[in-house]
Length: 121
Image 1 (cartoon, helix red, strand yellow):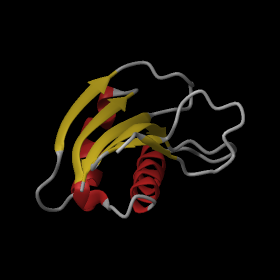
Image 2 (image 1 turned 30 degrees about the horizontal axis):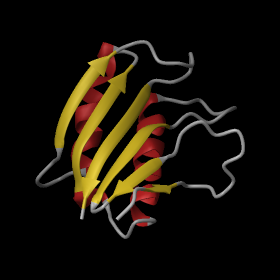
Image 3 (image 1 turned 180 degrees about the vertical axis):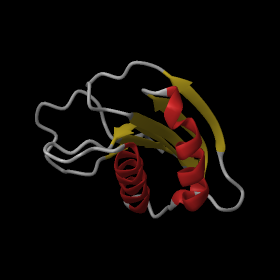
């Protein structure tokens, strides 16, 4: 089976990467962010929006968060680590996926978290 792009929106004008790529039964999801222009963009809101985006991408491939094998979490602030862990358990209450967490500068000043994922059927 050839690899196939799965995107949240069908309009790919001016896109330089896909939201995700399916290769057989494995899905590779690009880093997702949860910023919304004009919102307060708190860490919790951004995290929840990212998880919602991940869920929507997975749903397009008939999968869910239960199919996630690994997450890469990129935080702007080290002080958000504990909050991230609390929120993480809401979305992965049992058998959580493997995870890396890195504190780093992100592309946009208002970005507080970015998450990429690998999932499998």
